[in-house]
Image 1 (cartoon, rainbow, N blue to C red):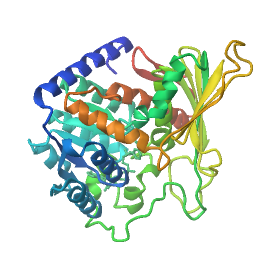
Image 2 (image 1 turned 180 degrees about the vertical axis):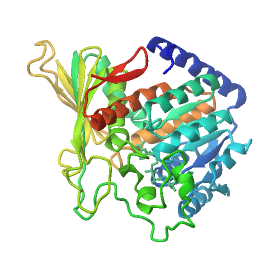
Image 3 (image 1 turned 90 degrees about the horizontal axis):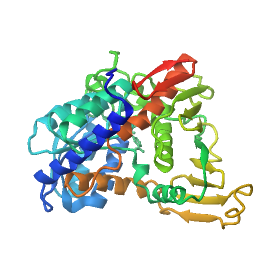
Image 4 (image 1 turned 90 degrees about the vertical axis):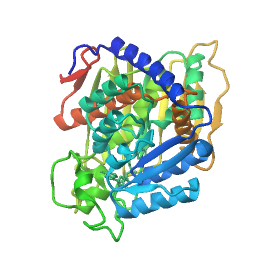
Length: 424
Ligand SMILES: NC(=O)c1ccc[n+]([C@@H]2O[C@H](COP(=O)([O-])OP(=O)(O)OC[C@H]3O[C@@H](n4cnc5c(N)ncnc54)[C@H](O)[C@@H]3O)[C@@H](O)[C@H]2O)c1
């Protein structure tokens, strides 16, 4: 890993690149210009985010092309653009066609995790602005390549860690900065889910018509190890290490990311993870755990205790920022609670509890609509992305460290100066 990427350099260069990014975007785009978009991946996330993008930015965007390697999703994506955008986009199964189109300035990469790196690197080389879903990349090393490429490009990039744009998490950050919880050395984060025995976690329904002629297996594999066509792997890719880090990079990264945001942290100094496939063992060839725990130490006397289990959702999901004078918890992305700490500073311990409610319909919209809007406005030269690649990489590093610790059965130490890890 390159020696010159010391942490301060990393942040300084990133700040410079971000400034360049805003400057170059404003040079090329007038306030009334539309952002011309190529949409890569119209699966469950891609379809949802496309709708959220139109909600917040309809008059400023035009989706000129969509791409997907399953014809069913490609058709759905094209139809959605026609309905919501009022134009007929080109439809491709090869994303490079989108990159070749000079009239497209911006791409959304909404494909499985292992494809983020090749698509991002090709898109940045083609001079596109990019919204890329989390995790930034499938490995730490790929993530740094992407950060470097972005730094050199002057392009606008947003990573899909949308909680940073949620008003509730922004409020939590403000409350922490205002001193409401005092010193905070400990955060508990958790994500619990459940489903019936016959609906195993992440065994999503496979479209009944899916077959090798309408599902481009080779393009799905991309840089992953070659294998024979397999519908489960294509449509349930989260269950296999070749394409996903499982809980670590799918769910955990959101929660370490938002802890970093709320408490002003960056990367941990160590991680120990454990867990396994405890629930779905029979007739299930999944690689990734369904039960997972990770403990992170940070350099400045701080720890995150993380847990995830797919067999009980009584406690839902959220983060509890446990300060010496109070606790703030954000639950299911739609409720924020503040509790004063009975053993805290006598001057503040009698403050009233607080309960704030996010949007009632679906908590995530509180984050995703403004997150995409922030990206579009950044491309238009009016804002700066709240989750540029260095921030996405910090979040992804936590996820990858957990996977490395779990797979190797060892504590893993992060060297923030050399930007590399070793096992203790
Ligand atoms: N930010 C969040 O809260 C959040 C939530 C869910 C998913 N995600 C992320 O979104 C991404 C997509 O996840 P998903 O749940 O939509 O998966 P999905 O399997 O539902 O969709 C992936 C889509 O990509 C298509 N695809 C596969 N290979 C392709 C290729 N080479 N070229 C073009 N299209 C290709 C598939 O046909 C499918 O339509 C992942 O990175 C995931 O981590 C983020």
